[in-house]
Image (cartoon, rainbow, N blue to C red; front, side, top):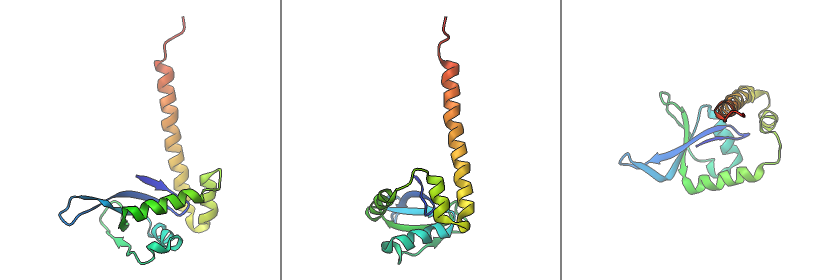
Amino acid sequence: MWLFTRYGFYSIACGNAPDGSLDPDVVMVRARQVDHLRELQNRFPQLADVQIVTMPHRDYRYRLVVAKELWVGLVAEIAREQQWSNFKDEAARYQGRAGSDYVHSLHNVWRVMYDLQEGARRTAIRSSPKEP
């Protein structure tokens, strides 16, 4: 799952059990920028002592490994915080100058997903039956 928040962008995946299989009770909260994980740790004291694991040669370089139940509670709290009508504007306000690269990336993601919507719309129009 991808999660875009005012704190940063996260890719969430199941953690691994000692035997290498997936552990459905553990999640890796992965990030491309270490500051995004630090923002989560600053916001949620439950994460303050969780070590940020750095894996330089992995797709998502930075990660927190936590119990899924803890993560579910934090995501619920993030959802309860929502008090804005425009996410990109809120991210820009919260991030300030230091987060301008993140906000710019949010606009790029918005454009890609808008293009997906418009592509589906164009396909639906092309495939709709012609009127006699």
